[in-house]
Image (cartoon, helix red, strand yellow):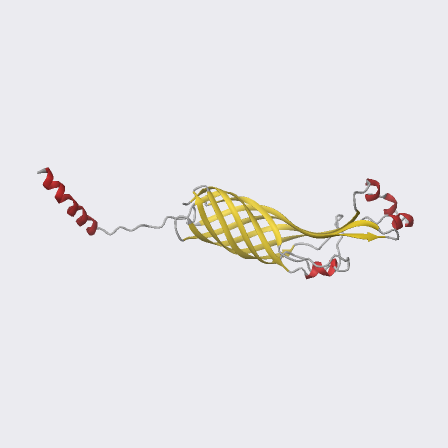
Amino acid sequence: MLALCALAAPPALRAQDGDFDIELEQMPYFGTGAGYVRLFMFVDYEGMNSISRPFGLGDFSGPFNMDIGGLMFTPGLVPNLRVGLFAGSGTKQISRPVEVGAEKTLYTRTIYFNDVVISSQIDYALPLSDALAVFAGGFLGVGRYTFGASQTRGGGENFSMVFPADVFHGDSVANLTNFNRFARQISYHVFVCPMVNMEYTLTPNIMVRAGAGYNASFRLDNWSDEGGVDIIDPPSISANGVFLQAGVFVGLFQH
């Protein structure tokens, strides 16, 4: 009798399988964690180059790289929506030894561009599988641009030569013998970076990101020096342009 029941059971189970339609619903994306992102930004250096060329330093070239870190999480109020907060900076510079003055003293001459940012991020996930998702969204934040030039004697310089009161007083002799120079202008801006990312969860605790986007910034004020005095008629300088990005995050992610 038991043997007959055992033989009859598989067909009954198969019949039940055929009687019901089972639907597997895709769960909303879930992810929370902290990570690091490197941006490779392809900006227009023409404004910077118009300054660096007369200084004898040549042209800025190559991507402008930014290192950014932050936190992100899915609040759960809207399915597949993720938010975050990030901050970071990047610097691009040209530096070259130069001989200055009648005695051909060796100095190091540098021109640099710096961007410091703090940003919110919002993304919408399009899950492709348990471990792979496409995200459409972007950064929205504020930042500070700094563009500067310096020239200091190679091998080190005494404090009194870097901060000489007589140069500020207009002493002509000091001006002839001291060729240390510093100049800097600062401007604040808002920016928006629409982007698309592909993210893959290697393990439930490690996720990697690759993507592309565009950075558009808008100045909030004029370029000014350290004392807040406006710099009149400067060339166009910004980090606007297409960018690529790569990142790695640790936390708890859909897998």
